[in-house]
Image: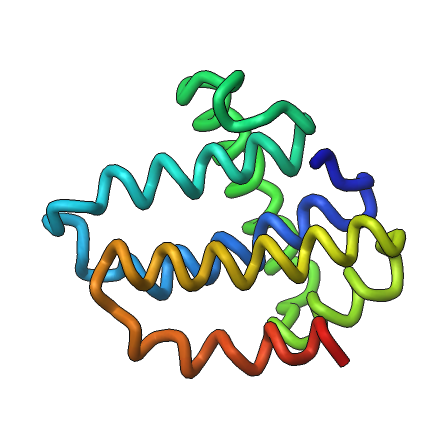
Length: 134
């Protein structure tokens, strides 16, 4: 689902933080490539609205490169916490977008931690997911 311009960069950065946290030190894990591809395809969905099966990985990588540049720019202007990001998304998202964000962040966190054998990392992610649901 393509998210509106007010939230897509922030939500992408939030997902990027989850991926980064879960994949740190796991670059040699047998499922790392699958986890990275899933993350990139999810970003492409957020930015373009195109379903995962209709997006190429090169297009998805381009979305990630754009996101990475934006994240660095965002951090130089202000350093948002995950909590700040969730509140901004909740304030600017439509009900449909908010439902999408709640569902995808939960599914993505569960999927990525399962793929990379890092279920313990969910404890740091769960509070953000609960914030979305409040």
